[in-house]
Image 1 (cartoon, rainbow, N blue to C red):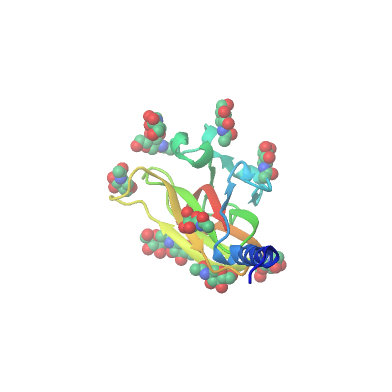
Image 2 (image 1 turned 60 degrees about the vertical axis):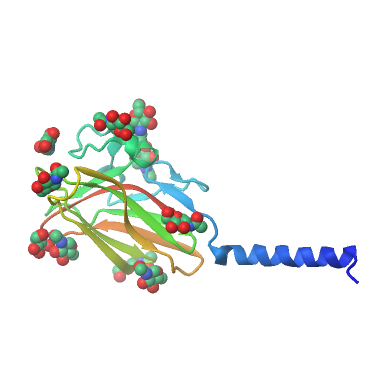
Length: 182
Ligand SMILES: *[C@@H]1O[C@H](CO)[C@@H](O)[C@H](O)[C@H]1NC(C)=O
Ligand SMILES: *[C@@H]1O[C@H](CO)[C@@H](O)[C@H](O)[C@H]1NC(C)=O
Ligand SMILES: *[C@@H]1O[C@H](CO)[C@@H](O)[C@H](O)[C@H]1NC(C)=O
Ligand SMILES: *[C@@H]1O[C@H](CO)[C@@H](O)[C@H](O)[C@H]1NC(C)=O
Ligand SMILES: *[C@@H]1O[C@H](CO)[C@@H](O)[C@H](O)[C@H]1NC(C)=O
Ligand SMILES: *[C@@H]1O[C@H](CO)[C@@H](O)[C@H](O)[C@H]1NC(C)=O
Ligand SMILES: *[C@@H]1O[C@H](CO)[C@@H](O)[C@H](O)[C@H]1NC(C)=O
Ligand SMILES: *[C@@H]1O[C@H](CO)[C@@H](O)[C@H](O)[C@H]1NC(C)=O
Ligand SMILES: *[C@@H]1O[C@H](CO)[C@@H](O)[C@H](O)[C@H]1NC(C)=O
Ligand SMILES: *[C@@H]1O[C@H](CO)[C@@H](O)[C@H](O)[C@H]1NC(C)=O
């Protein structure tokens, strides 16, 4: 016979399974915005080699790239270019606790300044990927929310993620919009 006590035990057991299985089943996504930081912890990205080599693109009158701010996530993005011979690499560094990451940039296709986007990704100090967008006849002038890197097989725990410009002779721009982690 199943009495109320047994039912209670069964429910507690099922809830416990759900509690521990939740992260394995996928957990929830959080966002780190380029400007406003982590949606839960508020931790901001670190921009190197110095914070002021990067610009907040939305309100930057000296930046060549002028995307439409209302199409960027939270109306903001960070803009930096590696100019051959200049300081390198340009790095945006993030800390997060999770098992998956999805990184989004804006791409620019103008031909009258550096719009090559040539990125390297590092997770916990290990190179895990790269991304190249070359201006081309098929690309729109600007593309928003372009996924440049994702990884859904990261061991659960605290991690450091770095997005950096290539430092070869063609230069590179980064228009970093936001990332999500699970
Ligand atoms: C998190 O976001 C990514 C990319 O948008 C999506 O593929 C994934 O299913 C989301 N995960 C969860 C748990 O919502
Ligand atoms: C970068 O510098 C600006 C202007 O000095 C400041 O408002 C912002 O909080 C700084 N960001 C970080 C992540 O240190
Ligand atoms: C690049 O060309 C666009 C028009 O195609 C113009 O609006 C913009 O001012 C130019 N930018 C630079 C840095 O020359
Ligand atoms: C920016 O995008 C918004 C939303 O799509 C649009 O209403 C607006 O006209 C655009 N602005 C420019 C300057 O293109
Ligand atoms: C840009 O400036 C406008 C007007 O001052 C402000 O409302 C907005 O928050 C600024 N955006 C960023 C990303 O700083
Ligand atoms: C990352 O790697 C570089 C070069 O191999 C090394 O100098 C640096 O100390 C490492 N940083 C961490 C946090 O492990
Ligand atoms: C994802 O991260 C793990 C752990 O750092 C790494 O071994 C793997 O190569 C990465 N996968 C991708 C697609 O970047
Ligand atoms: C994108 O850039 C390429 C090369 O700079 C140019 O040929 C093409 O017309 C551009 N596309 C648009 C939609 O402007
Ligand atoms: C992108 O950067 C890599 C690494 O430095 C380099 O080998 C490659 O030629 C670059 N791609 C372009 C199109 O410049
Ligand atoms: C510059 O770009 C061209 C064509 O996209 C490529 O062939 C070349 O290897 C790149 N140079 C460097 C130094 O990456």
